[in-house]
Length: 67
Image 1: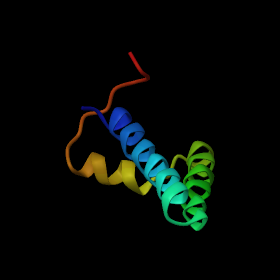
Image 2: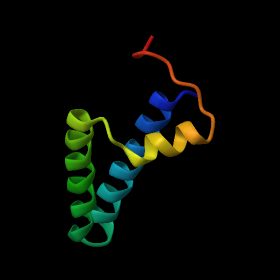
Image 3: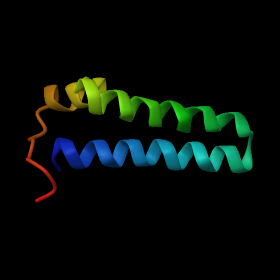
C-alpha cells in the first residue's frame, strides 16, 4: 500500500463514517465531513497534510499518480 492509496482510504473511511453517524445518531456529525472537505482543499493548495507526513514517517512508499 502506498501513501497515496492510504490517504484515500483514510479520508474515505472518515467521510463514510461521519455520514453514517449523521444518518443514525446526530446530524452534527456532518461537521466532520465538512472539515475533511475543507482540509482536502487546503492540502491541495499548500501540500501540507499531517496524515501524509505520518504515513511517510511510518515508511510507506510513495508512487506518482494512480498508475
